[in-house]
View (cartoon, rainbow, N blue to C red):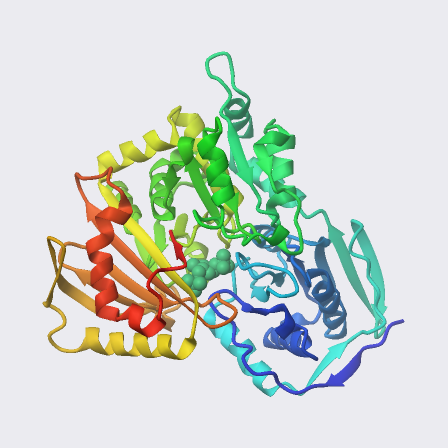
Length: 559
Ligand code: G16
């Protein structure tokens, strides 16, 4: 029989979860009792429900995942959890955790990831808690976890518990006279079984392999050495008949092979170049933990995440899951371009605008009012799980391409011809000094909320923008009436163009400023976004004084 011991500890500062969990440098997590404190605080926040419960545990394969899985096993055992479902070698994508929590109706799950942030001993790690609906914990829960971290005095652990996580199977232990079970599960199986229910795999297979009527549709799928590697291998190569040449970087590595596993035009430039110079009809990349996606077409034709959401919203009827469930509402995060709003209006669907963070979609989905949602930060997903889902998005696109017989570019162009186009860009200024950025945001907020700002005119190039509304966005959840304040500064102009500015909640050090620009054109739909949006970008830089505050004359990433 194994015994639990109680270890005295003292609080560590700064364990406040951000947009999606606690993300810090690996070396911060390696401080004495830092990780133990946070895990114990998560468990304490669950209250008495934890005794006798089942939790899912897995992560994106980055440096420290295996060690922290081991700690979670030992601390869970000491705190009365009965059973853990652990991905083999600690590997589970974020959407797979969500799928498994829902399928096996567990109390929740712990996801070990810093998402799209780089991995390795000098880079980032993260821990987040997902609830029984499979979604990231809401603010009330993360606030409670944080509160507990500030007062923690001890944690409980079973130091002698040795559990191998490299082999699939059930391992039984007795802890303090009670049974404790660790079930090491196939990281991929439940998720892939679910994708086969959602999509018409034979249809997508005919697209990829070609038929008498149509030549093979050549795809290039890039896992960026993140967690999706084994999922992509199973889905694309084993199930959909793609060849090894159609997939790249499918081995999860602790440091992502040195890559920054963020699927955008900057960090997935390798994929973009390969598709541009090769004979490919479609490219997709996913981030470290598999919830983000980037979609490109032949010649590396780029689909913005905001457009991707709008196109899928307009084409859900091609996907078997929605043929069965019907479609009930769309949503996007506030900074995401409003292209999907036009589809919602045309289809008579309810439309929601929530703060940045996938956790804000969960209540709407649970209430049956939301089927499809997305964010400009390369997140797309549906109510099939409660996380955004990169592989799902690629399969959704392939379903639409197979059903319509069109190219990616043709689908976009006909979409813009029908609905008009929301030109969109995001400028990121990464790892700036925090204090000047905080000051910049305060000064800008003061300026845009002063009397007289609404109605003021701002000239740039040959354009004049007149302010219609300006505020720090706040949101009341229509289901539980909880209010989230100060979710980003927005300036909305009379013509519907928008400037949005906020500080990222996912960086691990310093401040990352995000500037979002969105402008609608009904007819002029095939221009270059950077050219079309230049006047509004200049207005934003001038109003915010961003170059002066950050010392930067250019963003680090443009998407
Ligand atoms: C997380 C959240 C997303 C959010 C993104 C960016 O994604 O789940 O909802 O849009 O962060 O947040 P921020 O602008 O605060 O950095 P992920 O993929 O990092 O888990």
